[in-house]
Amino acid sequence: MPTQNDRFSEALVHLLKDWRYALDVRFRPFGLSQARWQVLLKLLRADASLAQCDLAQRVGIEPASLVRLLDALESEGLVTRSSAPDDRRAKRISLTADGLSLAGRLAGIADGLRAEVLDCLTPEELAMATELLERLRARVDEIQS
Image (cartoon, rainbow, N blue to C red):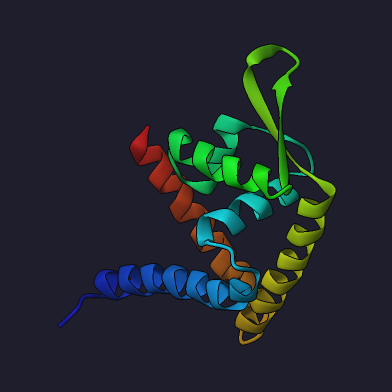
C-alpha cells in the first residue's frame, strides 16, 4: 500500500506531466514541440530579451539543445539573436513581431487551461497550495546547495 509520501510524489509528477500533455494537445494545431512552445512562452513572459544561457535554464534544457531550437525558430522568423552589449560572445534572444504574436496566442490558450484546471479550488485553497509548492521548491533548492 503506498504511503502518503508516495501518493503525494506520484500526484505531483503526474499533475505536471498531464498539464504539459494538455498544453501539447491544445498547441498541436500550431505544429510546435513542447520545447519550442516553452521557449516562446518563456521569452514572452520575460518581458525582455534573455541571455541564451538563462533561457536554456528556464526551459530546463542543455544550452547545446537550445542552439538547435533557436536555429529553427530563427529560420521561421520567430526569434532573433543579438550580441549582448557587455559581452559580444554572449547572445541575447528576443521574439520577433511574428514570434510575439504567436507567443501571445499560446499564452492565451495556456491561461485558459490554467483557469479551467484551477477553477475547482477556492481562493484559499489556491493560496495554500501555492504556499506549499513554493516551500517545497525552496527546500529542494536548499538541499541541492
